Length: 318
Image (cartoon, rainbow, N blue to C red; front, top):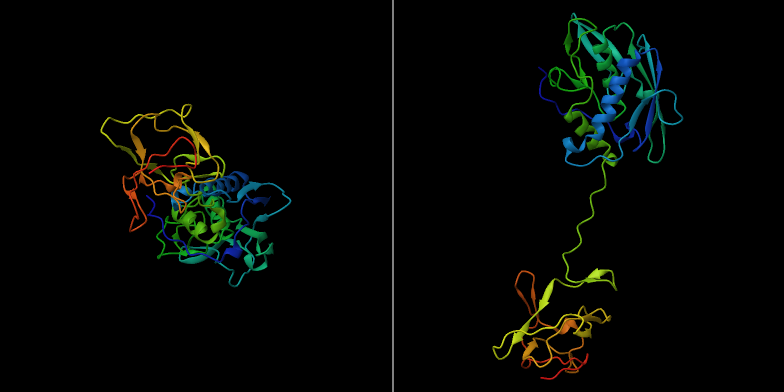
């Protein structure tokens, strides 16, 4: 039973691959199945980062095996070269009380490219003394994590099995396992906290709820409805658009054909005329918002607002 995932220490953004890059892992002797498993675990789990981080991932790198033409990991199955203090650390485990370096990512001598600079080519060394597939897969996954802005997660602060970046944990032999064959949810979240440009851009805000849509301006009119009065209690009598009038209901200087009060009815729009005493467009109307709140912006109204707007656009009688 593995422990709950740990918050993984991170490096700077410069120690990560550019967004949407295809990272070719050129294999120099690492058992191919183990390498493929670790690389696939990283590619898959990064894309699933939305379930870990609360944001969708669109631009994470993809790890492939074979010779490429761009971003590259040169991965060798060999003895580990001497490295005093590599950025991020190395995969050290304690076997029989003796520290053993099982993997090393040589970030100190890596190549960086772009503006701002991001990782371009890096050498990774996997200790060829290992023979167990599980151990090799774990170490390969750990070293890939160093190319994604993750540092070692040292035992006992990181409990055994709590991170792909587990380091300095006790194992029975060099073939023992103490971490993970791929990133945990916490590991992925740590990557995304550094390489924020792997995340999808935030969605556009939804358009305002409008009625009606203004096809002339590409926008919307306020979500309001004109107030119509039944002046004598005989009910409301309105027409459809076909039998209505051409009127600038949206206040956009583009009159459209709309429904209206029926000819001969005693219904009236409640409106506040312009300085010329006429009602020219829908913005002169007093209206009810979609939440039934009157939209009256003047504190004092100079005269009665009851008026019947005639079918001739631009004229009104009080």
